[in-house]
Length: 381
Ligand code: SF4
Ligand code: SF4
Image (cartoon, rainbow, N blue to C red; front, side, top):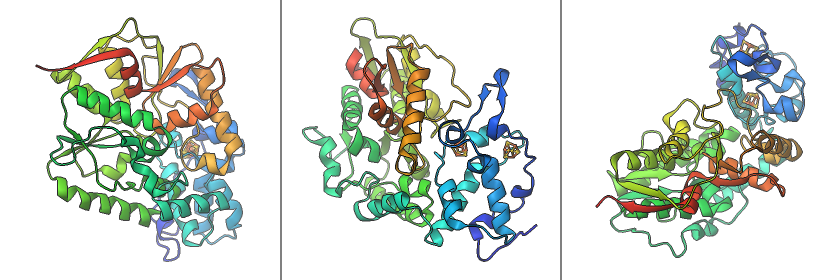
């Protein structure tokens, strides 16, 4: 068992864990209704069912590489980057192994050898050149805030949309600011708002991700003591150590304290909640559900699905396997077809589902968008 490897340092950190996999295949094809397990991996379900694309497969590949066995690094890269990063393989593993983290280490090792598949290399180039994964010019980022009266001088809270809301779904960013302002918050933002580094991190560029997080932390020095409220759930890890909460968490707190008052305009539609994978097992995951329940909205799926299969938005999947990512989104829309509206906790997932939406599918809204569409607001007097 190699426990140290100067040539594969990221994988060496997992060297003990790699030998504990029992090959139980929970992360591959297990079905156990009582535990909510039904083939948890979206890649296996909607792209390629071979176990080489599973958590178990990534552990096996990492073991082989560390042991010095001959591997075709391009074949390995195609498999390793065909993973949404949903983490389901970790939540289902009965002995607590970390196949998603091993996948991230494999990505880092492959990037260090310049083995990124072409679609991933293009994404990383976009991030390096324009500070976003959408291939959009950096100067376009502030467009989400045009005509919004932000308080840049003395903000009570900084709203941080993240790349998905800033570029792909600005309606979410504008709705979040609208609700916060309705609660009497002086909403500000970052001048020359940067990316937090989450897109680089999930693609395996840990160095760029750390640099972006550090740059954002430095910018926060100008706003010491001010809270950040953000839309992107994938931003959450990058903002650790800063006084940050998701819009859903802020909203729940504002309702609990009476800072925000919301009155429905008529009867809101039945909704299905799509929790997303990025904030699993954190207070942020349950916040959207809790807000809507508190406001009396009928929820078709009141319990969080422990192993709900991912919509395909993350991990570079839409760039790497666009047809597979589309099938994942279509399956998620079909899963919630009985509800007239799907409310998504994660704006990136919502943008991905929207791109796959067809006539007759449920309407889609983020929490902020849903609130603005169906409620009137008032602040505590
Ligand atoms: S992180 Fe998700 S997509 Fe990747 S191997 Fe695990 S279950 Fe499959
Ligand atoms: S990683 Fe965990 S769930 Fe997957 S085969 Fe190994 S022991 Fe089983």
